[in-house]
Length: 227
Image 1: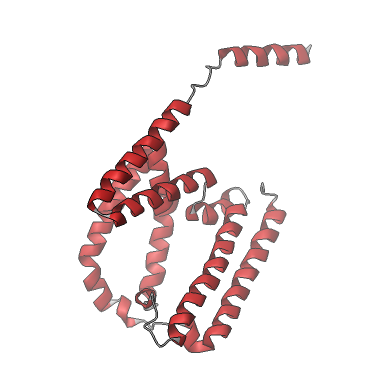
Image 2: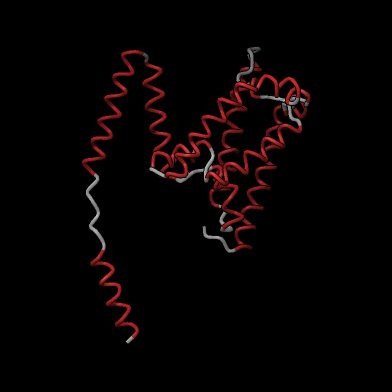
């Protein structure tokens, strides 16, 4: 009797569902729109067209992969799952090898090492900023990339977060000089190859990432999170 009731309920639920709309024509229109905009931008600047296409592709990959740095930090606590966490760790490992090869090549050629402007002082400001950013991205439900992705999906919460993200960024840029002079610049700048050598820096970083990966995997097994 219970099975019959369940079957009948399932049939009624299926009957009440609205048929999904065919989105293939909308997909073709979207692709056509992207191509037309790229061609128009290319008239003014090939770089703008390139940024438009790569940005669109990056957004598509983010949306389909559900890749989000916020989720990598949040999911282990909420659900016990660490699949995104481990994906981020693997991405860090790959970029470590790639960027090290690029930087090392420039250093060996006696050329200025690219990206050194990102080697900034570490101070109490780093900890406070990371703490505030962590709170903000969890409440908002996404970091910069996750927020942009969900704005495209139509999430109202992320649209609100996006507005305040812009306001906060402009405010931060306006006051950054003061923060840098009085707080950020007080700490030391650490470039690992200067301390451990190029090979030592790579080994240390990859070892740390490997440890984090194993810890994340074991944590998921212990919590019973979904893979």
